[in-house]
Amino acid sequence: MNEGRLVYLMGPSGAGKDSVLQGLQQHLHGRRCRIARRVITRSAEAAGEEALAVSAQAFDDLESAGAFAMVWRANGLAYGIPREIDTWLLEGYQVVVNGSRGYLEQARKRYWTLLPVLLEVEPAILRARLNARARESADQIEARLARSAAFTDDRSLREDPGIVRVDNSASLEVTVRRLLEIIESHPTAEG
Image 1 (cartoon, rainbow, N blue to C red):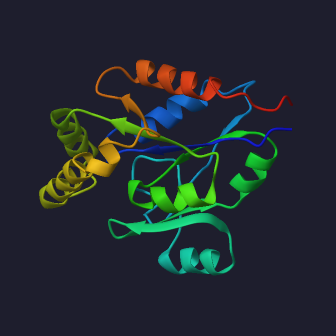
Image 2: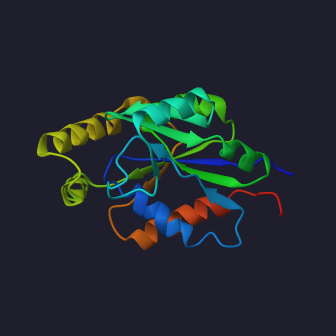
C-alpha cells in the first residue's frame, strides 16, 4: 500500500478556502481522499469553516494530550489538525487540510508527502470577501490584507517551485475542478 499524500491548502483569509473545501467534499465519493476538520478556538457561532470550535482551555487540554498532528497560533486563535490524519495517510488516503502559510515549513518537515497548494485571489476580490464575511472590524481587515500582501511579496514563497498555485478569483466550480485535478494526479492505494 502506498502512503497517502497531504494536500496542504493555504491562502489568505477570504480567499475562499472554506468554500473550496465544502465544494470539494461533494466530489469525494469513491475517491481515496479525506478532508480533515480543524479544531479552532473560535466561537461555534462564527460563520464560515466547518471546524470544531472549542474554548482556549479545551484546546490546551487537547494539545497536552497529544490530540493534534499539527498546531499553530495566528490572528489571536489556536488551530489544530487532529492526529487521525496520520492514520489516514498510512492507509493510503490523500488528506486535504486547511493549513497555515506560517506553519508550512514545520509541516513540510513532518510530512514528506506534503503538497502545498496556495489559493490566490485578486486583492480587490479579497477585500470584498473579507468585508462580506463581517467577522472583523475594518482595522482587522486592513491588517489581514497587509499580511496577505506581505506574504505574497515574500521572495522565498514566490520562488518556491514546490507550491502549486490555484487562482480563486473567479468561479468556485473552476477552483474545485482544479483541486480535483491535483488530487487525481497522485496515485493512491486501491481500497
